[in-house]
Length: 100
Image (cartoon, rainbow, N blue to C red):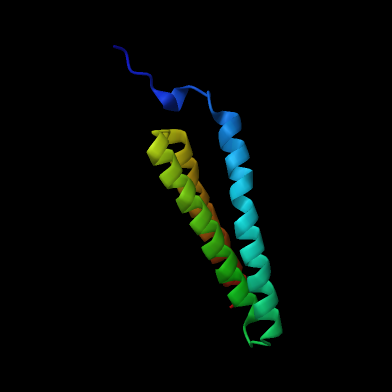
């Protein structure tokens, strides 16, 4: 029997896109509540709390997609997740270098 390399076949790509969009909804709602809470708390470093919160949310979402790619044996999803985490951390580093 011949095994298929699923990382090269785009059979479920529309499924993945729909699942990705659906996974943004809970993260977006949680981040909205986080922003409202942080803004109402009148903290001294509100912008830093928002930056770290956004970074944590995006890294959590990318980590979910890395595990999703590992379960489906799709190396492209895993690589995009790792690249997403690297880009998110680079943006946070740039933001912190301008703020501090």
